[in-house]
Image 1 (cartoon, rainbow, N blue to C red):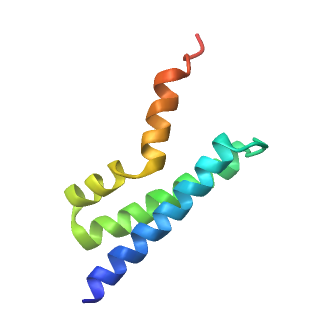
Image 2: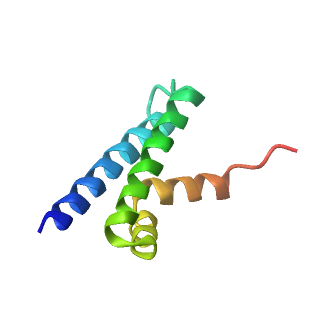
Length: 84
C-alpha cells in the first residue's frame, strides 16, 4: 500500500520538524531566530498539505492536532501574556 507508507513518512517528517522546533523554543540554549522557526513551520505546513492530499483535509487536521508541537504551542499561547 504505497499510500500508507507515504502517510507514515509524512507523519514522521512532521514529527521530526515539530521536535526540532520545540527544542529551539524550549531548549537549554534558546538561540533560534524568528527566520529559523518560521522556516520550520513552513515545512510543517507543506508536509501537512501533502498529508491532506493523501488522507483528506479532515483526517490531516486530526493528525496535526495530535502532534506534540501543537499542544506545546497551545500551552505557550495560554500561558504567555500578549503584549499590549
